[in-house]
Image 1 (spheres, one colour):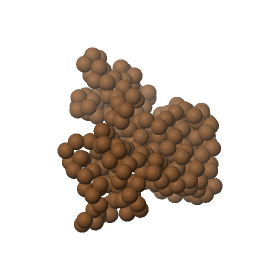
Image 2 (cartoon, rainbow, N blue to C red):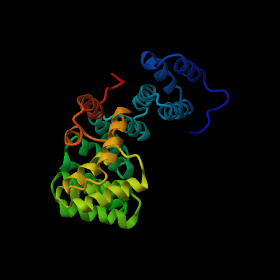
Image 3 (cartoon, rainbow, N blue to C red):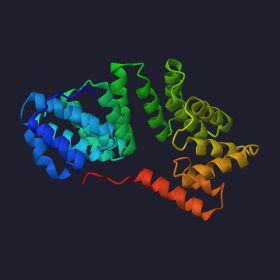
Length: 282
């Protein structure tokens, strides 16, 4: 984040004081007034919004970016950051709305295109997601994130051969791209090629030790081919991580591993919170 000026405009100072003591939700007019004060105020507010987001003050960041995009509707940074923040919280309907607005301003912004496609995927609008991934890949054919994400969407459409081809293309460009290994493993699992699935998940976890849900998917794949030599160790790790409120295994695979009702309740609560996160901005 760029440093703020030593003598920020009066409204900015007031906003900073509000953030220190409370939240901005009840002080929207103060932010709007400041945003209307000219380009210097807008840049100061933008940097403050980025800072709030980095500090986990998502409601304050959203308030700032929303006010900025009301005042200046020609700057794609504001709806893009709103989309990003809503997507981070799992609110993909809101995210898709703001990514679409950003693309109306800057149609060839590849990050906005891919993020919009990802939001559409989460909304199960798979054909539309494919369209936007293709749009990104026309701009940049070797864009690894777009290749891997499109492959994941193709898996949802049960087009497994195409999905695998996209993951392999992504991995040919960047061999340590964990999402491609995970997505490839998911496609192989649907094809019941469990040994290859295991290899993909193990590769992903070797690159990045903590990845949401992947360890549970690895254990599930091992069970599919009766690979029991690591079962007790796997079960112990799953018990500990679920107990620590980690996103390590989804509820249904856990049914085949543990008969602890408290563990199942905890795993279900973790998954429900992941699927239906609360919205701090209402």
